[in-house]
Length: 214
Image (cartoon, rainbow, N blue to C red; front, side):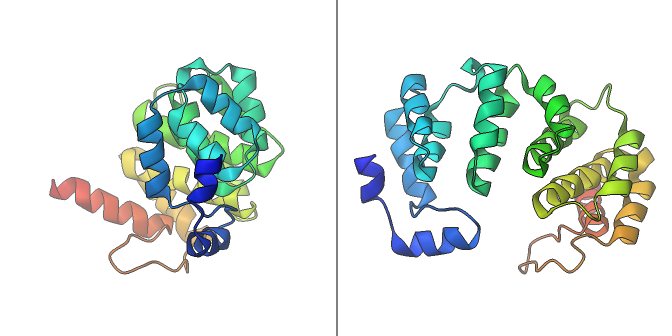
């Protein structure tokens, strides 16, 4: 904790806080510290229990994702107060855990929009890597009905799923683009030069074009 405190950078904190993350540690330095510590599950659990955002990010980097029980991960997700901790936990830990599918189903139906967004993130992963058994048309039904009025984090996760369905599944592409155009979610989202817009119709078209160019 003392070492993390020494890495605190006021400028980094200013940038991070604009994105809802209450820490001032440069992520490159955090990764370097994790590389030096190597994998330490007990230390990861102790770091998580501090409640400190930088400590929790470090915990995610040094833990063993497959060693967490289902209920542990459920509690951890609900404790993940900041966007970066939430995203890293889902992407670096939950996706690699044997309980990921069970949690995906449970979280997708959770009334807490932040928890539900994790369920949708896991669903997007399945759409891309293991779509067998998923009701893609049913997912599009839910997105069509609920995405427009969903809270920001949940809306973002549903939009990612919409785009992934359109990119990876040609038989659903026309409908996915149509839903994106009618709902116009993230249509005016500011996008840096050279980056692809998160607006689903634009995103789908660009990624399909890249696939065809390979």
